[in-house]
Length: 107
Image 1 (tube, one colour):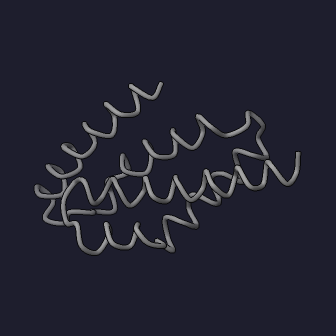
Image 2: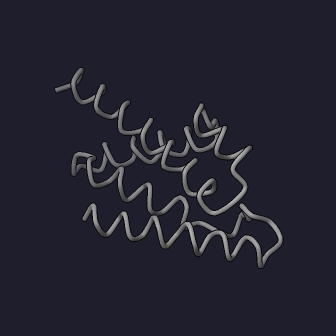
């Protein structure tokens, strides 16, 4: 699964960049692959219960919107497919850390 995610990420960097250039906006709102691939990573490590998955989704969206560093750096400074994909990978990382802490506290 990790190999699939890596291939999806690299392919996403290329596809997102090309699509952004063609649309004239590098991080166009209609491009969602940058959110799908990192959330698959979150779900890979998320406990298989709907309450954990909803929590994971809410956390991911929170971090994707707030963009704590280094996500903000990628969003503001890296204006290509890598920057578009990487800010969501950062959101996934923050989500996984919070999920791990919650799991440690609750279980």
